[in-house]
Image 1 (cartoon, rainbow, N blue to C red):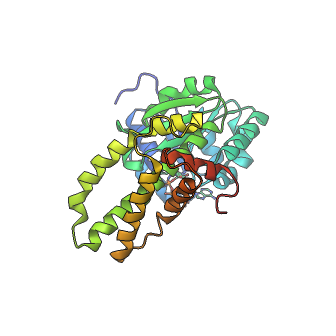
Image 2 (image 1 turned 45 degrees about the horizontal axis):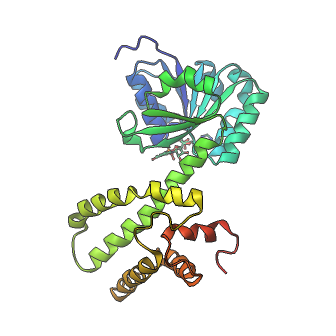
Image 3 (image 1 turned 90 degrees about the vertical axis):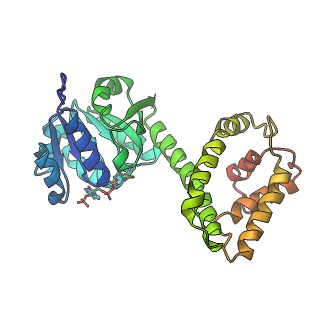
Length: 296
Ligand SMILES: NC(=O)c1ccc[n+]([C@@H]2O[C@H](COP(=O)([O-])OP(=O)(O)OC[C@H]3O[C@@H](n4cnc5c(N)ncnc54)[C@H](OP(=O)(O)O)[C@@H]3O)[C@@H](O)[C@H]2O)c1
């Protein structure tokens, strides 16, 4: 593909995700330099036209935009700490999953060494990179984002959030947390079906459809949590839900399917009802999560 404004980009970290990021940049016509701790992982990208750097300093020096996609915050520090002089005046886009405090620490370190850091959260798995469903969250200096957005567009929708460097990491963690909660429910549901000897494949499309409908409630839940008015717009009161959910878990146990994945949620719901909030939505249990004594 012809790119009329090809920006040289370096990618450090070529695991499953970093490899797809580099591949997407090459496909968009950017001159790409790659580095990976285990050098053999650069081979397939070199075949596609990337330049191989023998160490992080060489990779950083090659491009004004440097992408990091490493295992964790520590591996980012291990890779970049000794090369701040090569980063001066450049933009480091850290797509490594971190927590907000780590993103802020990296931004403060960058400010001391006169380069910009954008922190990014990738809301995609590697095969989605460059496709219509991938979106990435960014925070850090707005000018830096505007400057490199044409590069970032290669990965998927680039969504800028805030100058606070920690915001992308916070939302990344929030979205992943939501995903794992859903994963727990999905696995429990498919376990129930398998325990009855039914194929999971048959219920899977129904479950997908149902979860899309359930996802529509996120906005209502958010309003209740922001306003602390957990009865606002209630469509399924907590007392009813607690009774029903208890029956689901009893059924699981009777089928020989452990209820341990979801039992903590049921317990919080029961406590909330016992404290007189049965008329509200399930969102009220957030009060237990935000107070230290949630297990009392
Ligand atoms: N895969 C996904 O679905 C996905 C989705 C969203 C976000 N992410 C995030 O993307 C990042 C990379 O994920 P991945 O799937 O590519 O992981 P991965 O396949 O396990 O690759 C990890 C990468 O980090 C490198 N690395 C680990 N420790 C290092 C160190 N101390 N110094 C230098 N390099 C080091 C590895 O180098 P070697 O090859 O030498 O081991 C490899 O390049 C993670 O932060 C992950 O949370 C991944």
